[in-house]
Image (cartoon, rainbow, N blue to C red; front, side, top):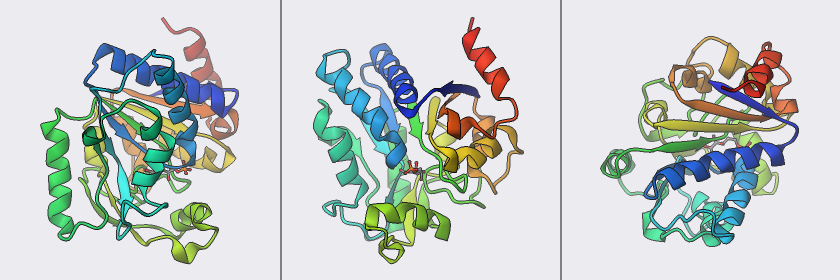
Length: 256
Ligand code: F6R
């Protein structure tokens, strides 16, 4: 796990955007795994700027989002389709038919989850997966106790996650759905490269447990220790509880 600590979220997002750009320049038809949430908004803004300047094109890129709330129609302003449209898709040259977001309203949701996995496989697998992390250590909506080998399925959200996400629902936790369709941890680990972003003190504990704690289903993000190609982009507050912080900075400053 390569841990890259920046002064602030803008600097960290710019570095992560550079990594996404390099991936697309190396393979125009890259398959990207995408996250939603407050953390990735800056990254998407940078990618939109790069696309606007003609530095990178998403014309041949395919995308697969990690998750969607169960029962949330794509047309709802709180859906992850709406989020992606607002923060990324409407600002880049991606072909909408190549963008995939789990359908939280699928009639047979179990069969749908299998189809979503198959679609990822048919596209050749995810080249680069973008992740945020929950304050409870979740990735995607794989909440604590998720199997480290799990595939796309429905998960029940923790009260903590619902409380964290209530800010997108006018602060009303009762409006936050209880269930979500999410790629599994096994699905995420199949990606060829993973970028995880985390900002703010509220993420510091989860980040330290992810990177320096034991690999355990209690901290789903700790499964990333098993992946050979993970880059973690942090601001100083999110890095504040890392025991080996000085070493990570030293490694980055002396990159061969
Ligand atoms: C969203 C997702 C979640 C978020 C995480 C952090 O698609 O998969 O794991 O990345 O909950 O959310 P923010 O960035 O809002 O703190």
